[in-house]
Length: 397
Image (cartoon, rainbow, N blue to C red; front, side):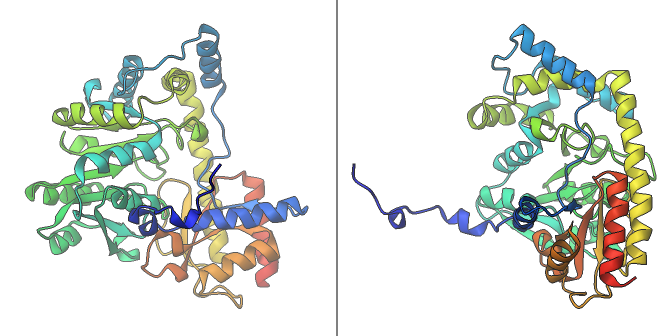
Protein backbone atom coordinates (compact mmCIF):
# COMPACT_ATOMS: atom_id res chain seq x y z
CA UNK A 1 0.00 0.00 0.00
CA UNK A 2 1.46 3.35 -1.04
CA UNK A 3 1.98 5.81 1.81
CA UNK A 4 1.38 9.45 0.91
CA UNK A 5 3.23 12.07 2.92
CA UNK A 6 0.88 14.11 5.07
CA UNK A 7 2.74 17.22 3.90
CA UNK A 8 1.11 16.73 0.48
CA UNK A 9 -2.36 16.94 1.99
CA UNK A 10 -3.53 20.53 1.59
CA UNK A 11 -5.92 21.87 4.18
CA UNK A 12 -8.51 24.53 3.44
CA UNK A 13 -7.42 28.05 4.34
CA UNK A 14 -10.30 28.40 6.80
CA UNK A 15 -8.58 25.91 9.12
CA UNK A 16 -5.70 28.32 9.72
CA UNK A 17 -8.16 31.18 10.25
CA UNK A 18 -9.75 29.38 13.21
CA UNK A 19 -7.75 29.77 16.42
CA UNK A 20 -7.25 26.92 18.89
CA UNK A 21 -9.60 26.72 21.87
CA UNK A 22 -7.10 27.53 24.63
CA UNK A 23 -9.39 26.45 27.44
CA UNK A 24 -9.02 22.90 26.19
CA UNK A 25 -5.26 23.17 26.66
CA UNK A 26 -5.88 24.17 30.26
CA UNK A 27 -8.12 21.15 30.64
CA UNK A 28 -5.38 18.89 29.30
CA UNK A 29 -2.98 20.29 31.90
CA UNK A 30 -5.57 19.76 34.63
CA UNK A 31 -6.14 16.18 33.48
CA UNK A 32 -2.40 15.46 33.66
CA UNK A 33 -2.31 16.73 37.23
CA UNK A 34 -5.34 14.65 38.16
CA UNK A 35 -3.79 11.51 36.68
CA UNK A 36 -0.76 12.22 38.85
CA UNK A 37 -2.99 12.24 41.93
CA UNK A 38 -3.70 15.99 42.36
CA UNK A 39 -7.13 17.17 43.40
CA UNK A 40 -8.19 19.87 40.92
CA UNK A 41 -11.23 22.14 41.34
CA UNK A 42 -12.75 23.01 37.99
CA UNK A 43 -13.96 26.58 37.55
CA UNK A 44 -13.35 26.61 33.83
CA UNK A 45 -15.63 24.65 31.53
CA UNK A 46 -19.16 25.94 31.05
CA UNK A 47 -20.84 22.71 32.05
CA UNK A 48 -23.40 22.50 34.87
CA UNK A 49 -22.53 20.00 37.57
CA UNK A 50 -26.23 19.08 37.49
CA UNK A 51 -27.23 16.41 35.00
CA UNK A 52 -30.55 15.70 33.33
CA UNK A 53 -33.33 15.23 35.92
CA UNK A 54 -34.95 11.83 36.41
CA UNK A 55 -38.06 12.60 34.30
CA UNK A 56 -35.78 13.29 31.31
CA UNK A 57 -33.86 10.05 31.89
CA UNK A 58 -37.13 8.15 32.21
CA UNK A 59 -38.37 9.61 28.92
CA UNK A 60 -35.14 8.57 27.21
CA UNK A 61 -35.40 5.04 28.63
CA UNK A 62 -38.99 4.80 27.46
CA UNK A 63 -38.01 5.88 23.96
CA UNK A 64 -35.27 3.25 23.92
CA UNK A 65 -37.69 0.54 25.01
CA UNK A 66 -40.09 1.53 22.24
CA UNK A 67 -37.28 1.56 19.70
CA UNK A 68 -38.30 5.06 18.69
CA UNK A 69 -34.91 5.87 17.20
CA UNK A 70 -35.57 6.51 13.53
CA UNK A 71 -34.70 9.63 11.60
CA UNK A 72 -36.96 12.56 12.38
CA UNK A 73 -37.83 15.54 10.24
CA UNK A 74 -34.82 17.80 9.69
CA UNK A 75 -36.60 20.51 11.69
CA UNK A 76 -37.44 18.15 14.56
CA UNK A 77 -40.41 16.21 15.87
CA UNK A 78 -43.65 18.17 15.96
CA UNK A 79 -44.31 17.37 19.63
CA UNK A 80 -41.03 18.99 20.71
CA UNK A 81 -41.54 22.04 18.52
CA UNK A 82 -45.01 22.43 20.04
CA UNK A 83 -43.59 22.05 23.56
CA UNK A 84 -40.98 24.74 22.94
CA UNK A 85 -43.64 27.09 21.55
CA UNK A 86 -45.67 26.43 24.68
CA UNK A 87 -42.63 27.23 26.81
CA UNK A 88 -42.30 30.66 25.17
CA UNK A 89 -45.95 31.33 26.00
CA UNK A 90 -45.64 30.12 29.60
CA UNK A 91 -42.21 31.56 30.50
CA UNK A 92 -42.13 34.76 28.44
CA UNK A 93 -45.70 35.49 27.39
CA UNK A 94 -44.70 35.27 23.71
CA UNK A 95 -46.87 33.66 21.05
CA UNK A 96 -44.52 31.74 18.73
CA UNK A 97 -45.84 29.58 15.91
CA UNK A 98 -44.18 26.17 16.29
CA UNK A 99 -43.57 26.10 12.52
CA UNK A 100 -40.83 28.73 13.12
CA UNK A 101 -38.90 26.42 15.46
CA UNK A 102 -36.03 24.37 14.02
CA UNK A 103 -34.58 21.65 16.26
CA UNK A 104 -30.79 21.34 15.93
CA UNK A 105 -27.88 19.21 17.10
CA UNK A 106 -27.04 21.69 19.87
CA UNK A 107 -26.68 25.46 19.75
CA UNK A 108 -23.45 25.01 17.79
CA UNK A 109 -25.34 23.43 14.91
CA UNK A 110 -27.93 26.20 15.19
CA UNK A 111 -25.27 28.91 14.86
CA UNK A 112 -23.61 27.06 11.99
CA UNK A 113 -26.94 26.84 10.18
CA UNK A 114 -27.59 30.54 10.76
CA UNK A 115 -24.18 31.58 9.45
CA UNK A 116 -24.41 29.22 6.48
CA UNK A 117 -27.82 30.62 5.59
CA UNK A 118 -27.04 34.31 6.06
CA UNK A 119 -23.33 34.99 5.52
CA UNK A 120 -21.63 35.18 2.13
CA UNK A 121 -17.92 35.38 1.43
CA UNK A 122 -16.39 38.56 2.91
CA UNK A 123 -19.64 39.64 4.57
CA UNK A 124 -18.92 41.35 7.89
CA UNK A 125 -20.72 40.43 11.09
CA UNK A 126 -20.49 42.68 14.16
CA UNK A 127 -20.07 41.08 17.59
CA UNK A 128 -18.74 42.20 20.97
CA UNK A 129 -15.21 41.59 22.17
CA UNK A 130 -15.14 39.63 24.48
CA UNK A 131 -17.47 36.89 23.27
CA UNK A 132 -17.67 33.11 23.02
CA UNK A 133 -14.82 32.20 20.62
CA UNK A 134 -16.79 29.76 18.50
CA UNK A 135 -19.19 32.53 17.46
CA UNK A 136 -16.55 34.26 15.39
CA UNK A 137 -15.34 30.92 14.07
CA UNK A 138 -18.81 30.05 12.75
CA UNK A 139 -18.68 33.27 10.73
CA UNK A 140 -15.21 32.38 9.46
CA UNK A 141 -16.37 28.88 8.49
CA UNK A 142 -19.02 30.56 6.33
CA UNK A 143 -16.20 32.63 4.75
CA UNK A 144 -17.43 35.79 6.39
CA UNK A 145 -15.44 38.25 8.49
CA UNK A 146 -16.21 38.74 12.18
CA UNK A 147 -15.76 42.35 13.26
CA UNK A 148 -14.88 42.28 16.94
CA UNK A 149 -16.02 45.45 18.70
CA UNK A 150 -14.14 46.23 21.96
CA UNK A 151 -16.83 46.25 24.64
CA UNK A 152 -15.75 47.04 28.18
CA UNK A 153 -17.40 47.43 31.57
CA UNK A 154 -19.11 50.68 30.52
CA UNK A 155 -21.04 48.67 27.90
CA UNK A 156 -21.51 45.68 30.20
CA UNK A 157 -19.14 43.87 27.82
CA UNK A 158 -21.91 43.97 25.19
CA UNK A 159 -22.46 45.48 21.77
CA UNK A 160 -24.52 48.68 21.73
CA UNK A 161 -26.81 50.28 19.17
CA UNK A 162 -24.34 53.16 18.91
CA UNK A 163 -21.62 50.64 17.99
CA UNK A 164 -23.82 49.21 15.26
CA UNK A 165 -24.64 52.64 13.85
CA UNK A 166 -21.01 53.77 13.97
CA UNK A 167 -19.44 50.64 12.48
CA UNK A 168 -22.01 49.56 9.91
CA UNK A 169 -20.51 49.61 6.41
CA UNK A 170 -21.45 48.52 2.91
CA UNK A 171 -19.99 45.09 3.74
CA UNK A 172 -21.81 44.62 7.05
CA UNK A 173 -24.42 41.89 6.90
CA UNK A 174 -25.63 41.70 10.48
CA UNK A 175 -24.89 41.26 14.18
CA UNK A 176 -24.33 38.21 16.38
CA UNK A 177 -25.13 38.76 20.05
CA UNK A 178 -25.40 36.67 23.21
CA UNK A 179 -27.56 37.60 26.19
CA UNK A 180 -26.65 36.50 28.83
CA UNK A 181 -23.12 36.23 27.56
CA UNK A 182 -20.30 33.76 27.77
CA UNK A 183 -17.73 34.76 29.12
CA UNK A 184 -19.16 37.67 31.09
CA UNK A 185 -22.53 36.52 32.42
CA UNK A 186 -24.00 39.91 31.47
CA UNK A 187 -27.24 40.55 29.60
CA UNK A 188 -28.13 43.30 27.17
CA UNK A 189 -30.68 45.67 28.72
CA UNK A 190 -34.08 45.17 27.04
CA UNK A 191 -34.30 48.76 25.78
CA UNK A 192 -30.78 48.55 24.34
CA UNK A 193 -31.50 45.23 22.66
CA UNK A 194 -34.59 46.76 21.06
CA UNK A 195 -32.48 49.68 19.81
CA UNK A 196 -29.93 47.28 18.31
CA UNK A 197 -32.63 45.32 16.50
CA UNK A 198 -34.20 48.48 15.13
CA UNK A 199 -30.83 49.84 14.01
CA UNK A 200 -30.00 46.61 12.17
CA UNK A 201 -33.50 46.32 10.72
CA UNK A 202 -33.28 49.84 9.29
CA UNK A 203 -30.19 48.74 7.37
CA UNK A 204 -31.69 45.53 6.03
CA UNK A 205 -29.39 43.30 8.08
CA UNK A 206 -29.92 40.28 10.29
CA UNK A 207 -29.88 40.00 14.07
CA UNK A 208 -28.94 36.64 15.60
CA UNK A 209 -29.22 36.42 19.39
CA UNK A 210 -27.74 33.49 21.31
CA UNK A 211 -30.06 32.93 24.28
CA UNK A 212 -28.72 29.61 25.58
CA UNK A 213 -28.28 31.00 29.13
CA UNK A 214 -31.56 32.87 29.21
CA UNK A 215 -33.20 30.49 31.66
CA UNK A 216 -30.36 31.26 34.07
CA UNK A 217 -31.28 34.89 34.76
CA UNK A 218 -31.12 36.08 38.36
CA UNK A 219 -31.95 39.74 38.91
CA UNK A 220 -34.90 40.37 36.60
CA UNK A 221 -37.32 38.31 34.53
CA UNK A 222 -35.63 37.20 31.30
CA UNK A 223 -36.60 38.95 28.07
CA UNK A 224 -36.34 37.06 24.80
CA UNK A 225 -35.45 38.77 21.55
CA UNK A 226 -38.23 36.68 19.98
CA UNK A 227 -40.56 39.40 21.27
CA UNK A 228 -38.84 42.04 19.11
CA UNK A 229 -40.17 40.85 15.77
CA UNK A 230 -40.34 37.73 13.65
CA UNK A 231 -37.30 38.87 11.65
CA UNK A 232 -35.02 38.28 14.67
CA UNK A 233 -33.30 34.88 14.78
CA UNK A 234 -32.73 33.39 18.22
CA UNK A 235 -30.64 30.41 19.27
CA UNK A 236 -31.31 28.27 22.31
CA UNK A 237 -30.12 25.00 23.79
CA UNK A 238 -30.98 22.17 26.15
CA UNK A 239 -27.40 22.17 27.46
CA UNK A 240 -27.29 24.88 30.11
CA UNK A 241 -30.64 25.60 31.80
CA UNK A 242 -31.92 22.12 30.97
CA UNK A 243 -28.64 20.42 32.05
CA UNK A 244 -28.31 18.22 28.93
CA UNK A 245 -24.82 19.16 27.69
CA UNK A 246 -23.84 15.82 26.17
CA UNK A 247 -27.21 15.21 24.54
CA UNK A 248 -26.40 17.80 21.84
CA UNK A 249 -29.80 19.34 21.34
CA UNK A 250 -30.84 22.91 20.66
CA UNK A 251 -33.20 25.00 18.59
CA UNK A 252 -33.65 28.12 16.49
CA UNK A 253 -36.59 30.46 16.13
CA UNK A 254 -36.41 31.80 12.58
CA UNK A 255 -38.50 34.13 10.39
CA UNK A 256 -41.37 32.29 8.68
CA UNK A 257 -39.93 33.07 5.25
CA UNK A 258 -36.61 31.38 6.11
CA UNK A 259 -37.87 28.09 7.55
CA UNK A 260 -37.62 26.24 4.24
CA UNK A 261 -34.05 27.47 3.67
CA UNK A 262 -32.97 26.37 7.14
CA UNK A 263 -34.72 23.03 6.64
CA UNK A 264 -32.89 22.45 3.36
CA UNK A 265 -29.54 23.20 4.97
CA UNK A 266 -30.32 21.02 7.99
CA UNK A 267 -31.31 18.12 5.73
CA UNK A 268 -27.99 18.29 3.93
CA UNK A 269 -25.64 19.13 6.80
CA UNK A 270 -27.14 17.16 9.72
CA UNK A 271 -30.10 15.03 8.51
CA UNK A 272 -31.70 15.61 11.91
CA UNK A 273 -30.93 16.04 15.59
CA UNK A 274 -30.70 12.94 17.79
CA UNK A 275 -34.08 11.20 17.94
CA UNK A 276 -33.33 9.93 21.45
CA UNK A 277 -32.42 13.42 22.73
CA UNK A 278 -35.58 14.88 21.18
CA UNK A 279 -37.85 12.27 22.81
CA UNK A 280 -36.13 12.79 26.18
CA UNK A 281 -36.36 16.58 25.93
CA UNK A 282 -40.15 16.43 25.84
CA UNK A 283 -40.00 15.75 29.58
CA UNK A 284 -38.15 19.03 30.18
CA UNK A 285 -41.40 20.95 29.88
CA UNK A 286 -43.44 18.94 32.37
CA UNK A 287 -44.37 21.02 35.45
CA UNK A 288 -42.47 18.76 37.87
CA UNK A 289 -39.31 18.99 35.76
CA UNK A 290 -39.57 22.76 35.40
CA UNK A 291 -39.82 22.99 39.19
CA UNK A 292 -36.50 21.11 39.45
CA UNK A 293 -34.89 23.49 36.99
CA UNK A 294 -36.04 26.53 38.91
CA UNK A 295 -34.54 25.18 42.14
CA UNK A 296 -31.28 24.62 40.29
CA UNK A 297 -31.42 28.17 38.93
CA UNK A 298 -31.71 29.46 42.49
CA UNK A 299 -28.71 27.35 43.46
CA UNK A 300 -26.67 28.95 40.69
CA UNK A 301 -27.72 32.35 41.98
CA UNK A 302 -26.58 31.34 45.48
CA UNK A 303 -23.20 30.40 44.06
CA UNK A 304 -22.92 33.70 42.20
CA UNK A 305 -23.75 35.62 45.35
CA UNK A 306 -20.95 33.76 47.12
CA UNK A 307 -18.24 33.78 44.46
CA UNK A 308 -18.39 37.46 43.41
CA UNK A 309 -17.55 38.94 46.86
CA UNK A 310 -15.13 36.06 47.47
CA UNK A 311 -13.19 36.95 44.32
CA UNK A 312 -13.14 40.60 45.33
CA UNK A 313 -11.74 39.64 48.73
CA UNK A 314 -8.92 37.82 46.90
CA UNK A 315 -7.92 40.94 44.97
CA UNK A 316 -9.90 40.42 41.78
CA UNK A 317 -12.16 43.20 40.56
CA UNK A 318 -15.61 42.42 39.18
CA UNK A 319 -16.44 45.56 37.20
CA UNK A 320 -19.88 44.34 36.12
CA UNK A 321 -22.09 42.13 38.27
CA UNK A 322 -23.08 39.12 36.16
CA UNK A 323 -26.85 38.80 36.01
CA UNK A 324 -27.06 35.44 34.25
CA UNK A 325 -25.34 32.27 33.05
CA UNK A 326 -22.71 30.93 35.49
CA UNK A 327 -19.64 33.04 34.74
CA UNK A 328 -17.77 35.95 36.25
CA UNK A 329 -15.41 37.99 34.06
CA UNK A 330 -12.89 39.02 36.70
CA UNK A 331 -10.17 41.65 36.37
CA UNK A 332 -6.87 40.23 37.66
CA UNK A 333 -4.80 43.41 37.26
CA UNK A 334 -4.36 43.92 41.01
CA UNK A 335 -4.33 40.33 42.22
CA UNK A 336 -1.55 40.05 44.87
CA UNK A 337 0.56 37.52 43.00
CA UNK A 338 3.64 37.79 40.80
CA UNK A 339 1.45 36.83 37.82
CA UNK A 340 -1.27 39.38 38.64
CA UNK A 341 -2.20 41.38 35.55
CA UNK A 342 -1.29 38.53 33.19
CA UNK A 343 -4.31 36.25 33.06
CA UNK A 344 -2.52 33.41 31.27
CA UNK A 345 0.37 33.31 33.72
CA UNK A 346 -2.03 33.66 36.64
CA UNK A 347 -4.26 30.85 35.39
CA UNK A 348 -1.25 28.59 35.13
CA UNK A 349 -0.11 29.52 38.63
CA UNK A 350 -3.56 28.88 40.10
CA UNK A 351 -3.71 25.50 38.38
CA UNK A 352 -0.25 24.25 39.29
CA UNK A 353 0.17 25.86 42.71
CA UNK A 354 -3.40 25.71 44.03
CA UNK A 355 -5.17 23.11 41.92
CA UNK A 356 -7.84 25.59 40.76
CA UNK A 357 -8.68 25.92 37.05
CA UNK A 358 -9.90 29.20 35.56
CA UNK A 359 -9.79 30.36 31.94
CA UNK A 360 -7.53 33.22 30.77
CA UNK A 361 -9.13 35.88 28.61
CA UNK A 362 -7.19 35.04 25.45
CA UNK A 363 -9.95 32.76 24.15
CA UNK A 364 -12.57 35.47 24.12
CA UNK A 365 -11.08 38.21 21.96
CA UNK A 366 -8.31 40.76 21.69
CA UNK A 367 -9.71 43.54 23.92
CA UNK A 368 -7.59 43.38 27.11
CA UNK A 369 -7.54 39.55 27.26
CA UNK A 370 -4.55 39.49 29.63
CA UNK A 371 -6.47 41.56 32.16
CA UNK A 372 -9.35 39.12 32.67
CA UNK A 373 -10.05 35.55 33.68
CA UNK A 374 -13.36 33.80 33.19
CA UNK A 375 -14.56 32.10 36.36
CA UNK A 376 -17.22 29.42 36.07
CA UNK A 377 -19.31 28.72 39.16
CA UNK A 378 -21.03 25.71 37.58
CA UNK A 379 -19.54 23.50 40.26
CA UNK A 380 -20.75 22.42 43.68
CA UNK A 381 -20.90 25.09 46.41
CA UNK A 382 -18.49 23.26 48.80
CA UNK A 383 -15.93 23.03 45.98
CA UNK A 384 -16.23 26.77 45.38
CA UNK A 385 -15.56 27.35 49.07
CA UNK A 386 -12.52 25.09 48.93
CA UNK A 387 -11.23 26.88 45.82
CA UNK A 388 -11.45 30.24 47.59
CA UNK A 389 -9.51 28.88 50.58
CA UNK A 390 -6.78 27.52 48.29
CA UNK A 391 -6.46 30.84 46.49
CA UNK A 392 -6.47 32.75 49.76
CA UNK A 393 -3.44 30.72 50.79
CA UNK A 394 -1.77 31.16 47.41
CA UNK A 395 -2.24 34.95 47.42
CA UNK A 396 -1.43 35.36 51.12
CA UNK A 397 -4.89 36.80 51.88
